[in-house]
Image 1 (cartoon, rainbow, N blue to C red):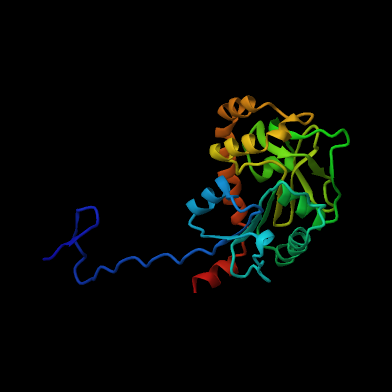
Image 2 (image 1 turned 90 degrees about the horizontal axis):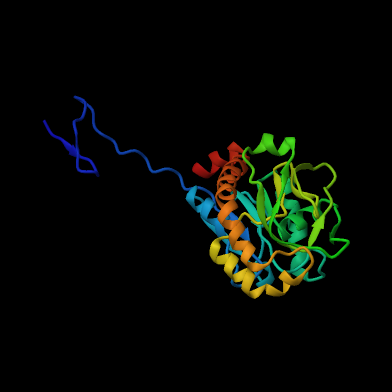
Length: 266
């Protein structure tokens, strides 16, 4: 009677008359489209969460000439990240990204906009994007209040989340408010399979160091927190924000139509 050795060094005794067949390799998961706005930008913690789930990242930078796909048939979803520019800028790539968001909306594919990406989503949906009327900004950790819909979608929201923006937006028509704030009332919203987050759950410790060093001018604006508070608040609130993000990303990608998942495995 023969034995097979397993990878961990143990022995497997086969059933009489049966051959052991190795388990088939799981089908590769579709990539997630990542849209970034600077040459040095990274998808940060969102990218880490997607890789941990097994999704490759298709990183594109339209600002530097990269194209955007005409369909998301070959992607599990799409994320547009933040940047120092405005959704109101007249640059061609800004207008092109806003127009492109119509594709995931029409195809009902998972879409996530973070900060600038959320403002682009709001603008695509017809909402106004503008600075705070008193020139205030959110730079640092600020409280958010999940709505009943937000709690139903994803429990255990963090009390404070990281921000870096001077513009906000009205809630688009037909969208569901998920979380609200003080100076900028709309902090998170949902429109079908598309989500907009005004805050930055993507920021890693290294990214925070870069932003608070290179973007120190923004920290002189009304409402901004001094640099030392960014790191003090991170020590208190980052664990809950990181746990929330993992739960959110899991649920967000689960919105991908099962028919597409099946096609990808064939």
